[in-house]
Image (cartoon, helix red, strand yellow):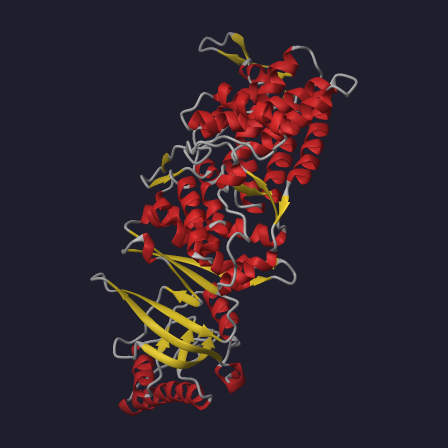
Length: 574
């Protein structure tokens, strides 16, 4: 395309628009460009994989610093411009949303699959045939994972909360991919006898050696598992994570983190002279403000005499008195209001010995209503005793010399709502602890939904690699090369674990493959922590079957999508 224009003397000349042609990529050149962009993201994440993975410092445009080795957090805070690189960011988010763990491993696996595909494309194999081979290998890997998986008794999880599980009933747990996944199922057994506790917690703390929360792994694990069990429906094998609220407050230590069987809100009593502790609270949960009604249309009120002003003031005060009286008549001894109220209403509430909490958010109002068994009341006329919420205790907590206060609602009528209260020395530690608790909660939920596990340390990837490589010899056609490439890509996980642990990747992988073939043990993996054995079953390193299966499926789907793109067309580039 071109454009005709004229110079200062009126002579015409042509401007050629060649820049648009330069931006267009086709065929193998386009595919190599996509693979290069995806590989750059995957290589960035490689060093964060495993228990010895390194942290990344992320600095936002406004100078806020985040330190983490969680894959989803790192990619979410990166300013990724390339279109294909954004697909890997979405891939990590999908893994985090569905499973909550394995966000780093899924990106590393996708990068390895693309790297292997690049060599096949250079050899002239059509991308569709590569995609078909990858899909066949993925199905085989998923089936093989199901055969090497083991089951745990979900009922044991419920007995853990009651402290009635015997020694050796629950497999030890730790994760090779996302360190916080070990926090859930492994240290869940911290209520078992002391010998089992020490073994489980020791393995989990070793697995979390690179995390900020590693020093308090056992305690945080107990908190996460108790939170899940408090809201879990074990009959339906389902967990509503919306009922688990995570709050944090700067100050104290990570060991001060605790589980509140109720609701914690970042508010205080509306008046400093109101009681800070209410026993056997009967709560009136209001979404209407403590103020006189306002006109819905514009109006003008003229006050010309003192008598008129006094009458107006008394009428306004009567509104407040009637509101407080309706609340008192219902039997409530605590008011929780979504809106604010002025000093006069606050004073009347204090005079009537009716403590109040104002400016409570909508989400918190819903949680309070669920936990206390109360109803959210939109109008004062609707207040009645049967709509009140009940709790054994409502108290105000104060922290240090900062005058920060929070309200704790405990002993709720319906305990299907809990809050994890995280403490830490600074905001960065608290945010990292929240991310770890999120992973721990998600993995515990996954174990309740699907109680099958596979052992970690790269063992399932090596076992699947051997199975796929053997099956590829029986496949006729070009797809066998893609299947072997898929098997080689799976080896990237144990090799990265070994590399991040300071071991020789090739020597470690060769030793694991040789041992798995000779001993027929699919749970032999990378000894990342130098414990002297490759037996992941003995070390207690495992991952959920659902998480590992989802990881392989998602990575394969994204790689197939990228391989099927052979042209990039931008506006104005034709």
